[in-house]
Amino acid sequence: KAGVTQTPRYLIKTRGQQVTLSCSPISGHRSVSWYQQTPGQGLQFLFEYFSETQRNKGNFPGRFSGRQFSNSRSEMNVSTLELGDSALYLCASSLARGPAYEQYFGPGTRLTVT
Amino acid sequence: AQRVTQPEKLLSVFKGAPVELKCNYSYSGSPELFWYVQYSRQRLQLLLRHISRESIKGFTADLNKGETSFHLKKPFAQEEDSAMYYCALTGGTSYGKLTFGQGTILTVHP
Picture (cartoon, chains in turn blue, cyan):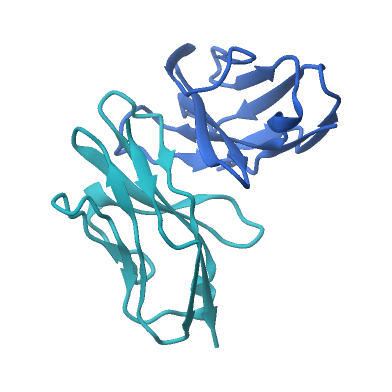
């Protein structure tokens, strides 16, 4: 079974630009969550999608948005990039919602903002 | 607000020694606790979860609600246990939201 895939793996953008990151969950998984990982703040929850609906949102500005498609694939978008947005963005998928369902993480997209 | 604290950024032990990675949490309801591990050049993966009450790779963790702790223990550390370990919690309706601690880098010396 293929794992969670994220594209692109690496990205370099300039301040003020926008970026879209993609996540393909494990086949059959319907829940997708996004996390930002930085050396200073660690792993922070961005948002969760289930059945194309955002179910939870973390404490991030409105520049961060996401969506989920009918095939459970998800994208997140960051507009008006700032230097502080440089981070590893992780996507995780699970079969369904609930603590009994393990979250499987992707390899991440490394975003560098210059 | 929910919070997870891992007081040790770095932990070094020798092979065969017991190891304990500390995790304390703050949560107003009944939390579900997890330990995740990230080995070098590998993805973050689930090690064990409180609701399963299982032992994985010799590791166990007990939820102590009185002390709000979920420490990870292994009686005899192995070199292959060297990795970054994260304690995480979820609860209530925030099932898809994991709140992570800052992580502890465990190094097991030969």
